[in-house]
Length: 506
Image 1 (spheres, rainbow, N blue to C red):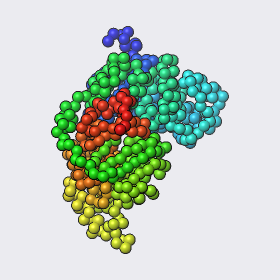
Image 2 (spheres, rainbow, N blue to C red; image 1 turned 135 degrees about the horizontal axis):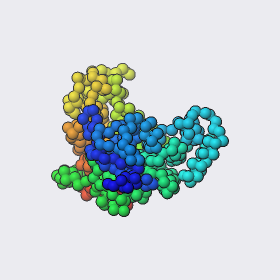
Image 3 (cartoon, helix red, strand yellow; image 1 turned 135 degrees about the vertical axis):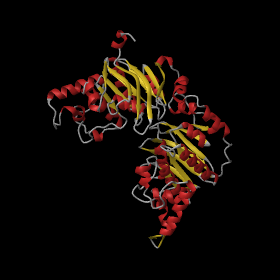
Image 4 (tube, rainbow, N blue to C red; image 1 turned 180 degrees about the horizontal axis):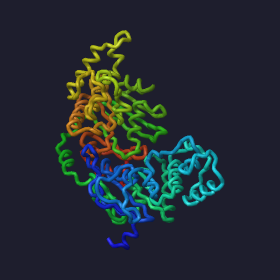
């Protein structure tokens, strides 16, 4: 690269790697060139290294190897403040604004904490609105704004701080269509005026629409890096997921799905302000149905609505021919169990024993005269520990002492040795090792073979295709396609979920 070429580069990474103290290698020899006044798309599957790279650019992580040049000068930012002062602003999906302050106070948050703004600052605020092409009351309280408007506040905040590069990490995952278009319009207008963006998104149609150049990460390395015009839908999807021969062999060796029994779970016109828009489907006894979708698609929200943990959800949920009404307790009584994605916050009681965690949903059955039957609770726990191979110091060990895989097995033991007939699984194998994954997958299939119905969410499409009998593709709160697992691929599911392929649910 010549000196003249280097002058036309805003950010230049060469051979950047990141190894964490536990030995995990998140990035390997990453090269990245970002030119001023462009939108640079950064894409990859979950675990590809995108988040680690964003944190290095934001100054939250330091690279373990390689060099980073900003405006031609080698940089080693040691804290977010260093990147911010250099002119790099990062906007995450969960916008970290001060909710009790006004818009204008948030926009100029770094310039002081005055409750009322002087005329010069208000004039500067209106100049920022003109740059973005947006109208927003500066005195509005941020907590009262919709998420799309908060994204705009974050963009204004970055511009007020003098950012030359704005890194947007999954900026539209929680936005409605109108809000997305507002954000897109602001990005286009600012790009024309010279502001540079790195746009990180699972929504590949958005990346192909907005980006000038696209870099694809897979397993911590750059596998494709070229102008957007040199990508088509097929090549972009293939670059992201690769040609996984092992997955194809696993799929071809799977036995045919057993005949399914009666309809055990029926969902009709399920809706929620949390992002579900008229979802209808059913799951039969003996069937494993996977919900395939990207971050923010509404996958987890569907599970929470069925389980009644989303109290604002509407629509019909029927369990074995009987309408489900009432709170979560009614769902459990009807035979529905949920293994939540965030097992530490929503699943386990970390300071309590394995026995208490496994027995939790069944205290009414395991109790006599409103008193807990410790012997029966312990028997249930010992059965779960033995059957799932949970490695611990015993049933009295606190859940906090378990590894990720064993903690996940505890959540399975909570449900599979009960009268539960419908199992809702949200990222059941996330953060567990290969051996634990195999055992969890075996338990899922055993539950279905015994006549249960399973609805599973998994960000790893390969894992989802391997375990499910049928797949429903979820995009922006709707089921947009349905595929038999034996007749689809990760490529097709990703193309459908990301909007690169149109699907019609059957």
